[in-house]
Amino acid sequence: MKNFINIADINKQDLRKIIEHAKSEKKKRFNINKSAIDPEKPLIDKTLIMLFEKTSTRTRLSFELAIKQLGGHLLVLDSKESHYGSGDESVYDTAKVLSQYGDIVMMRTHKHEHLLEFSKYLDIPIINGLTNLSHPCQIMSDIMTFEELKGSITNKKIAWLGDGNNIVYSLIEAAVKFNFELSIACPKKFGPDKKIIKWAKQNNAKILITKDPLEAANLADCIMTDKWISMGDKGNKNEKRKLLKPYQVNKKIMKLAKKDAIFMHCLPASRGEEVTDEVMDGKQSAVWLETLNRIHVQKSIIQWCLE
Image (tube, rainbow, N blue to C red; front, side, top):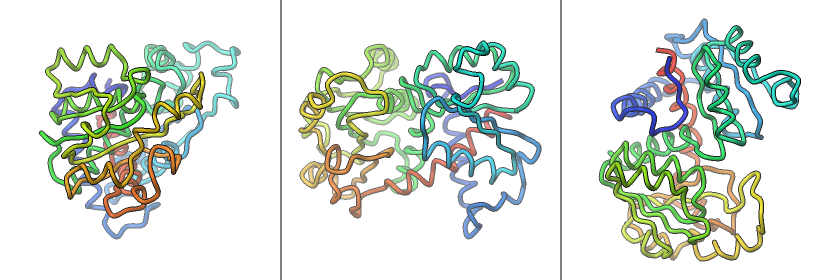
C-alpha cells in the first residue's frame, strides 16, 4: 500500500513518474470538457473519500474533478458533520469504517500528527491534502507547471520570499528529490522548520537561506510566495506583517530575476501584501496554470497510490 504524505517519503523515480504521467494525461484531455470522464475510465470502480478538518477551495474542487475525470466515485466528510473529530468515535474506529467504504482517502487537517495517526489504522492509501507541516500536492503541481513553461526543473533556481511555512517544507523536500537550487528569503523569526533544513543538508540540497529578498531573487528562474497570515495563525499578526513587508513580490523583485522568470502563488492570495496586482496578473504569472494543474497531478497521485 502506497501513501502520499510527504515528498521526502517517496523515491525520485516514483515522483518523476507521477509528474510525467500527469503531463501525458493532461495532453490527452485537450479539447475535452472539464467534467467529462477520461476515455479509458481508469478508476471506474474506485471511491475516493475526502476528509476535511480545514476549509478548502482549490484542494476540494481539484480532487473532486480529478476523481470524476478518472471515472471514480466521491464521498466527502466534514469533521463537523461526522463523529470523527467530535470525540464520539475513536480515530481507530473511523479509519476502519472508511477502509470498508472507500478505496483511498484524501485528508486535509490542521495537525500533521492527525494525518499520521489516521494513516496507521487505515487499510487503504491516504493522500495529504494539506497539514500544518506540509502541502506536497501543491508543490508537485508547481513542478509540473514550471516544466510545462520552462523545461526541466533540474539545476534551475527557485526563489521563495516570505513565511517559511508548510509550502516551504514541501518545497525543500522537492529541491532534494528534483535536484533544483532553492533560495529562501525570510525573517529569522519566520524561518523554515529546523528539522527539514537538517534533513536537506544531510541529503546535499542546494539551499540558501537568507534575510535578503534581493539576494534570493537574483537571477531566479521562478519566484514563489504565499499568504503571510495563514489559516490558524496565532500570535501578533500585525507584527508578522511588519516583519514580512520587505519580502513582498513586486515589480522591483521580478526585475532581479531572469527576464523569462515566472511567478507562482499557491493561493489564496492577499493582494497588496505578499504580492502586488501588477505581478499577480502580469505576463510572468503562472498562478492560474498552477491551479489547473492541481487536477492533473492529483489524478496521477491517486493512480500511483492505487497501482
